[in-house]
Image (spheres, rainbow, N blue to C red):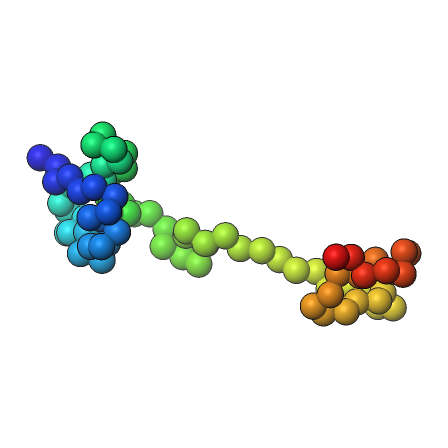
Length: 83
């Protein structure tokens, strides 16, 4: 049997609900009185490496000789900084 919490209750008690879900209890969060989300622990065999739940991005440095100014948006061909 799932235990239901409204969005407002879940917001106030999130850490407690995560602990309860990780221990195996079925937690359902309702929105406008209807079930919306179920909290469940990650399966034991699932990967928990760096990329789990993380969006990674790569940044490529400009080629040698290219103008690059950290913190500003600048388009060299127009000579005018963008707003």
